[in-house]
Length: 266
Figure 1 (cartoon, rainbow, N blue to C red):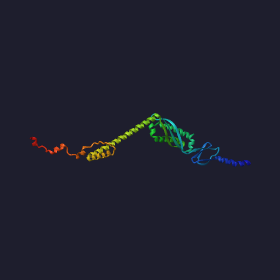
Figure 2 (figure 1 turned 90 degrees about the vertical axis):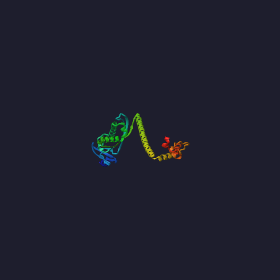
Figure 3 (figure 1 turned 60 degrees about the vertical axis):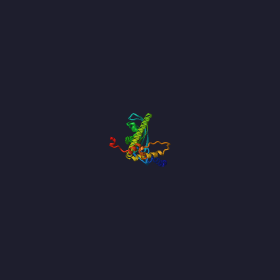
Figure 4 (figure 1 turned 45 degrees about the vertical axis):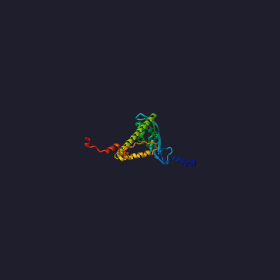
């Protein structure tokens, strides 16, 4: 009898130690009592009755899941290999444990099948140029399917698109042709602007003859600054006419008076 009384406090202490659980701030404990769901507890110190209760720990932290590379055939029949990353967290621990056997594995498989399905409905140009739109579409589909499990998919990112080598060369040629097209357009626009400015300058200079002489003198100054041994430059004769006297024909005509009609008749 004495031994039983001495062992009773020890049994109670062992019972309490085995019943106490400590859950971290980001953890919740889903308690099943005699096989039936009781409640979700935590964080902090909780009591789990031995033999009667069973606890399943669930983390509420954001989970980063890497989706393995998937072979995808696009809508324009191009075979590519695509991988992605999914960010999600458990919002309802009860449903995450009760509604699905393994929510991590289920979410991974759902992400793989959804990735193949969505990318298979897009063309290659859309995969390369509209990745943000595809990411948003993937996130909405996954979030809709995982909502009954108490899981919130916050973000989906397509990480890498592995193209065949022949397709990479074709895209490189297309990009080079596009750059050449843009260069030619820019060059043509520059030529058009230059010709417009030259036409306007010629019109202004043509209205004022003195401007032509000023432009000529400016050109001479620019040529003189060059280290040239010989410079041949055409000089308009109109610029030098004031320095010369009248020509011989013009002098004779000025010296002889004009004929009268009587002289011509005689």
